[in-house]
Image 1 (cartoon, rainbow, N blue to C red):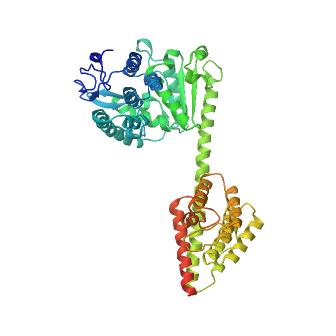
Image 2 (cartoon, one colour):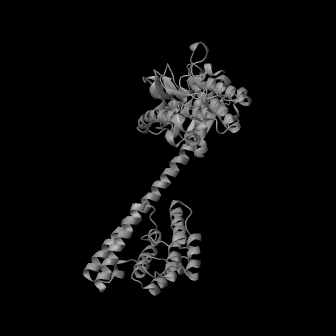
Image 3 (cartoon, helix red, strand yellow):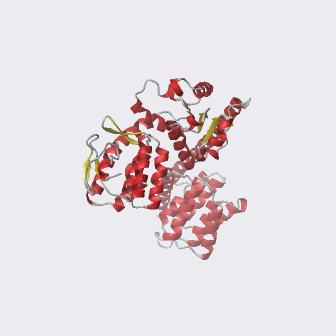
Length: 470
């Protein structure tokens, strides 16, 4: 391809201009920066451009990746790969996205690489166009965010040769009816995109792809599986699966095309449509995946309910403590004899610098539960002492308790929070991290606001105790 035959990166219209020039496309009005590349690279760019023009984005991405392996500083490949990733094309002289993403263009790895490589006019051209595209991406993302999350995405070829309805469409409609009647959210394009202009499809397709737990790929013929828009859908869903391995793509194909599947799909377990119990197996498989998601969501809700209940108990106890402080009554009378309550009481003793009694109470807790991470951490604090009110000094004994606290911390989101706090203390000796770790109660509250509020409640109570002691 000669420089006179260079084409617009956005609408593929011919461009006229010399190497090193910024050229405004006469058709779409967007600016291009013309560069010369060695013959092999230029040929590959042309092939990728043809694939993009045919909407074969997955094929184009592979070619751009191959170019960048040969020349990581090929700015045309970097920029056009970014455009391909978002499916940028011109509709009525306006850039549109055929592959919406939640990631802003300015955070895309190819854009960041371009900013590191380019300068002057070339960098300005990319920056100016990226801003225009980003505005369009944001609007599309806002539309997508308003949609209902999808459970099942049905990927199929609607019409075959001569415009006739395919067998895959008929099967897809049956599957849609089954799961729709089960109360599931199903994306089936004839239903989900009915009465909508084509340019408004992408936000809905993107949202369905990004939220679906299962994709059912129907393929009576290999040509259907490889059809442009089917490939765009299942290839994008495979990328999503790479980010979330809980999601599943189920090819439902004719047995005879199994060996012809694209390499990306060959590793997947497919269901043969000829099997006598095919539909029953499909429904069972999909329901198993959806049930796993439902169980996980139920478990997460249960954990949240428990944390909320513990937080409420802690709040109630804090209020009782404040009341007893105001009335001049013994604080310990308000605390029941559970492990969580003992941890709260030990913390109050520690905050009053009564380290010996606090350590004794932590030891009592460990006598009943040797794996209480909070109690080990309490002993570490008692052994280390707070010397100046700002620095946490870990003695040898304190460090030993500290390590036990780490080893017995639950391996979940709350555990990660504790470990992060402990690492921060080891590195900086910051009492702020200690306060967040030694949060109010036997159960550590992971939400930052709740932890802060719990600490605040105790701080109020402790301030009252200190004031009453003076």
